[in-house]
Each structure stands twice: as structure tokens, then as C-alpha cells.
Length: 351
Image (cartoon, rainbow, N blue to C red):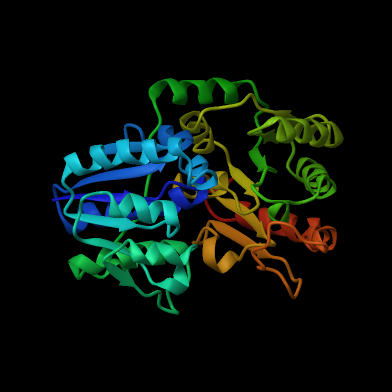
């Protein structure tokens, strides 16, 4: 059997889809699983032992210019490639118009997607042949994805071990070890301050306060600051300067390079961001906060993870911008974040 997963983005959502691979390979031994993913995330899945073929696409560009001739030439080229693969099942886990078009153009007669109230764009529902409802008890993203792919196989994913995993190269592992060898002998924290939207971020004051408290409490510790773009790089240097000695701004790493590093640090702190999800899949403890998004829907789960939801009455609004943003940022308290960090590191095996 050969199936196709359509989940181009975002990084965090792609990471939370990885348990689907475990489910499919346990449900149908020998199954071939292809994946349509945003081209800048291709490296994440390249070489993954549970993925037969990766189809990288500029999905974000196609969404932005969905009626351009260049977009439809790209979609047509992808259509030819997908039809040649002759899929038995297609799982549209993205739920927007572009993913729906890709699903419809796959050449597969059996295409599963979500019902209208669970998709990003209602037109998506016209493109899939089986529409799966989201049940109230399956609020978390991972449960939603697993329920959809489990329908054709009549197997209960809740009884299965489905951790999801990522791979990195020996070179990336060696580079991560070389970096760690240059640090002090104490704990290594990674603070991920970058976010996709302003309503998912914390203030520089908050990061600085937490960083100082961490270095004061955990002697010889090091805080690492990654970045993705120029604005995040500048913010990282500003935060590092304010925290002082013991805080280092990283060079920009590939996704696999970051995965190799995240496996080796002691704890990751961040908002609702892909690197937090990546750390969780790799088995690294995380402390995360949620303002415009909802912890109960996307936060890492398990005893090794602590998620803090803003106490604002409008938290989880899903807005990208808000006139109460400053007040909402201040609702995430350094004291609460530090308490979560301390509690996690007190668990057996974490120090």
C-alpha cells in the first residue's frame, strides 16, 4: 500500500504530524508513505526511514499567489508526479485550499480530510472524498491527525506507542558535540525567542529576566539563543547582551543541525514554536508559554514538559496582532517560568 500525507507547514505542525508515521507503519507493515511538505522544511524529512518520498512545494507562495500562472504550472507539475505514484489513500491534514487542490490532483480516488468546521478554508472540503469530524475529546493537534489517518484501518491509535522521531546526520551530531565542548560544565539551556506572530512572542524584558535568574540559580550554566531571520538575530544579540556572560547567540543552523543540538541540551524554553515541538519529539524537556494560541491544543505533552497559558480572559484568541499585546506579554511572569524550569530539572534524570 502507498499513501500520501499532505501537511506542508508549519514547522511545529509538521513535527506534531510525525506520530502519524509510527501509526501507519504499525497499522500496515511494509506501507510506503510519501509526504508533501513546504520546500524550506524538506531537510526535516529527508532521509527519514519512515518516509518513502518527499515532495517539496512552495505552498506558502502558492497560497499568496493562488491565481498566478506560475502557481498553476507548479501545481500541474506536481500533479503529474503524484499521479505516477498511484496512491491508495491520501490524507489532507492541512485543511486549506492549496492542500485540497493537491489532494484532488493526486489521482487518488480515496482522499480523507476534515469536516468544514475543522478546516482553514471551507473550499477544502470540496476536494476530498471522505470528511472526518473532530471529536470533542480529541482537541490536541496530534490526536486530530491520528484520528483522521486511523479511520481507514479501524485501529485505535490510543492503544499504541506513537512517539514520532527525527533523524540527523553523523556530521550534524559531531558539530553539536563540538559546540557543547566549548561551553562551561553546567546545564545547557536553549531559549527560543522567535515566533511566527507577535501574539506568540514574549518580551525581551521577560527573556532577560528569566535568563539572569537561570544563570544565578544554576551555576556554570549556558543559555543558547538561536535565530531564523535578521530581526530575530538582532533580538538575540540584544537579549544576550542584557543577560550577560553565560549567554551565547548561535550561528544559524540547518533543521537537522538544530535537531542534533536539541537532543543534547538539558532544557528548551520557548513559545508556541516549532523548535519547542522538535525538542519534545527528541526527548528534551521543555517549558513553553501560550498567549494567542492554546496550550491544550498544541503544547508538548508528558511529565517532561510544562506549558503555561496566559491568564488573560482573551488568551487563545488566534489573532496575529492585538491592541492588548503588551499587556498579554506581561501576563507571562518570569517567576512562573522559573518555577516551571526548576520543577522540571528537579525530576529524576534531568540533572
